[in-house]
Image 1 (cartoon, rainbow, N blue to C red):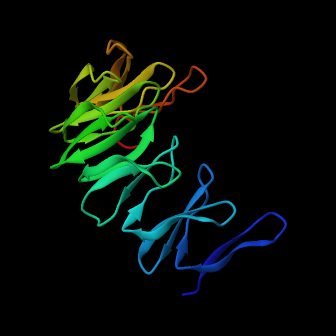
Image 2 (spheres, one colour; image 1 turned 45 degrees about the vertical axis):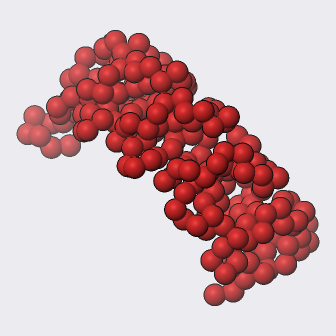
Length: 212
């Protein structure tokens, strides 16, 4: 049990321990909980939003997803103003100006104006990274760009994020790499691959007896 508050680097108590839980600060805002309801404070300890929400996620790119009742999700800005109406079954953080939203078990993306750039139609979606995002239809994975165009149709059994212009892809039991256009640039012949860093990627081939 116990209560949570905040101290600064000098050890001064800025927020007296009075909350049931307290998050780290993100973009100058922390999420605090009291009696199973969440609110927001700034670094001075001022309560920007009273503890009345079912949940508030941490701020990313100036906005945070929230749910008042646990049923519908929207987005608020740092003043607590609800800038995107709570109408989604779930909403995730913004990444590269796009946020994942769910309606009826299907996922899509909105921009910060609330416009549905990609209508919810996918079984699963990942955050945008380097301008591209992994999407899933059925059991297959593909890639879309920020316009919603399917640069790589969902056809792979698994896929990694684009890193240094390349993404690992799996078909059957083997992995290879494609570029941003979907062109296969490294043949699918490895048992596992890791993302490119500094122009190099770790690849794995199992021993002949199938071990390793």
